[in-house]
Length: 169
Image 1 (cartoon, rainbow, N blue to C red):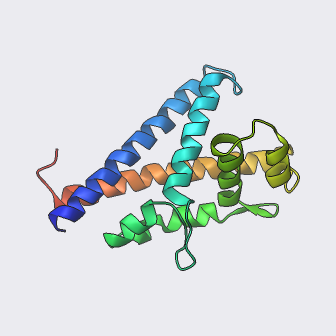
Image 2: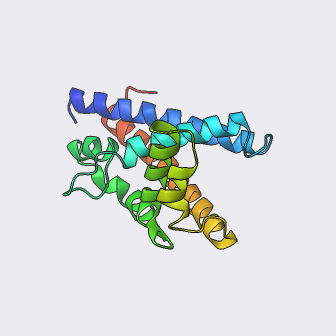
């Protein structure tokens, strides 16, 4: 792996480390604050933004997922490390894939919000029933799987980086 690729992989690892920190912090705070608190909403908004940036935005027609990680890892020959994440994002709850739910929530509630629930109702809640216990559990399970696989990706990429640049400690 040349210097430019080691630099790219290092920056990916740094970014994933930030995300993993957010995940670990969320686990801590979720035990100590209300689910609708400002703190919880802040962390969830941040995690949704990272998730869409990594895996969902600008999905081209000849790639399995959007986001900025796939093209970066493809440049390094490591795109297959995203296979399990792609599978999780493609899982459906009723008629919507997880990736569609996350992307629409991020777009309508965080980034391009009009500060009403109408856009969320129209784009998500009128299409699938996330108030049902089964759907809510499946959604939370899929998010947990996605976040766990992202943590595993971070560890794997750290090992790849160490293999190609053993001077890092």
